[in-house]
Length: 113
Image 1 (cartoon, one colour):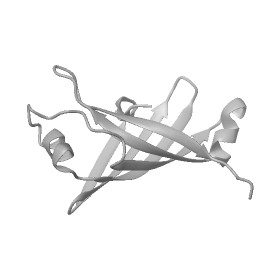
Image 2: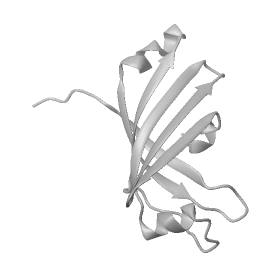
Image 3: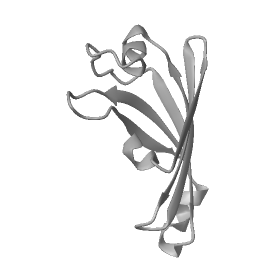
């Protein structure tokens, strides 16, 4: 999932060198409501991206993390509502294109001891 799907509502707060992200989206294809919040470390590289520096480059995974929740009325997808999902993100910078945030998302499951 990329942040391109967050066009409906996007907000962020900065706390010193940390950033908080709240994104809400309605995916009308399957009628899935996605809500995720996260936190990111404002590294010098990310500062360049957020500041619109033309020399900014893509970041690696490891400084931005999210927790996702899903809501749906579609019974085939209802199990998503019972899962706990977390992800790590990175910012992708490509000349002439808007900055994209890419996430690797995983579902947490019960492990064995």
